[in-house]
Length: 358
Ligand SMILES: *Cc1c(COP(=O)(O)O)cnc(C)c1O
Image 1: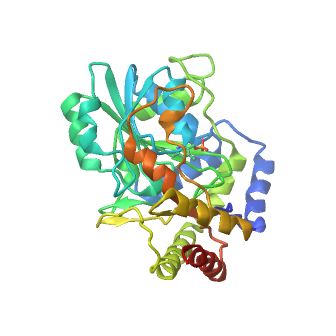
Image 2 (image 1 turned 90 degrees about the vertical axis):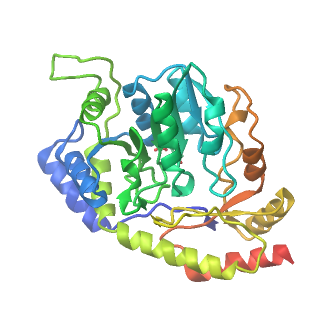
């Protein structure tokens, strides 16, 4: 069986050393030393300013929205994982969907301004597959209309734009360290910001608003993560360059094997250091995508329709007019890509793809 992704599992011996240290300290959670170490090491590795390690990438979105005090309407993308939209609704705001650009599958900045009303307070955009949004245009629009910008950068660990971490953009960027993501801590996630006041606010939000054992500064939630999860992150972080390098060579192998097929790929602009988080392909029709998917499934290969359906079709939001997203989500597939995947398995997948096209 070849799934779309397999979580990376590090050496058990290395993980065990951390477990022994946890047993010695008997400090399991609540901002422990391994959580602190992970935060420091993540900032060092990415060259970012403030990072707060959280329970998952969804609570990261919710804490970001809360800390920025957004309300009313939030402009967002219909082409993302469900958490991008559900976090907005969970915070009692209204998602306003703006269609995506066919080149990048990210929110189309030229369509944002038309969607802005007097109730708009923020833009929440996803860098889909780790491919950056049009950062400059979004920044310009946000400044002009006095809007907050949150990037759902769940897929983006290690991505750089002109040598700067993508997490440095927007008021807040959120990340997911879920087991299915490129860099993971089993469950986990976090927020990045360059603003000290926001960082401090989110530190309080993460821990019930506790400012000392008997003082509560404002509203909080439980966004914490444990020493066990942080330990997994510390072990995996040592391997991250190797993981990205392997994914890069698998991606190049796919590119080579599939070059004769009528497939499109989202475009990555010059100046981007990509993390090879996903291998999305766009077929020229829904039927062709289905045909390929069925053939692959029959051979026990399980790509995923990332992302389908368009998020504006969720039962708790208003349907929007997003024809490009509707169309792309009907034709897109992400092929298996993970550290343990072999070149022979890529060959097999590509051979099956070729038979579907013949
Ligand atoms: C995975 C993901 C999330 C949610 O992250 P969790 O850690 O699973 O809560 C949010 N947004 C996007 C785009 C994702 O892919």
